[in-house]
Image (cartoon, rainbow, N blue to C red; front, side, top):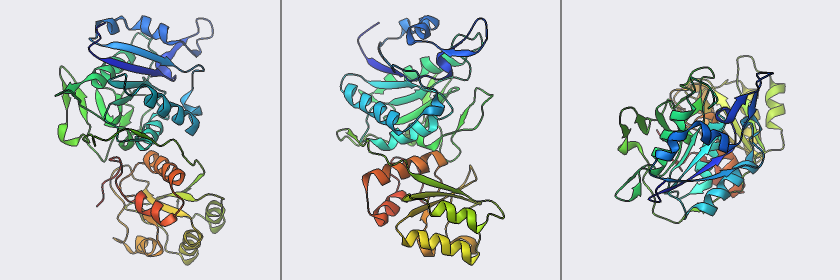
Length: 342
């Protein structure tokens, strides 16, 4: 391999690194050397590949903020040595990890590309090889000696998504991810085409790692007929942040008991952010009577954030700030391309 560029692959686990047990047929994790054996094409890349494998391979269902902190630390440690990063990760929580790292990596000017697969790399019809090869191609892509995509992204099934705009929508198709409220950043076909106008430019500032997260965040998902007891139990939890999933454009019940419970929680220092249960569209507080009261009592507008972005952004802000007013203001602010203020 040539030394013209260097890419660090961080192997955390996931389906991409699985192989069926010859007897039980149960999928079991393999080490990265076995992955490399299945992709001899890596030797043809005009790039030097460095690898860091987690000592204990992680099922992405066990992902947590400590592992996110470890990933951020690895990126910081190797930041000046490599041109970009590819993180192999289970698809189930990939959008959460990508969203979290987008907030933790301030002033990022190198690609951090998450990828994985729906079928193990050893499977005949695997999607793993293309995902891995193209993720590396994107991570090393430069123009005028600058990275083409200085963002935290997800590459899957020929498409590159902004990480904090993505969610896993399908567990049985190769097209596992979608980004309904933001365009794809690149598409792979015969040529690799970048959507230049949709990619966030580098700030040109030194990388700052924000590893402190507060994971104690409550989730209030509304449904018709939700009772005062359920809402009160959630809002009375010993947490400082609540992500509230509402109907349509941010609408909720207008019953006095509901609004009063929200107001009491906010008055007691909780930050409540309103995001829609709809995958497409945005929250418009005040557009309907059913959301005007939310705006009046101080519920934060989550606009078009995904659930994954909203929950990790709340964790990030709670870890950085104590003042509820500051957190509310920043929840409503576009920090890393995660929302569109409308």
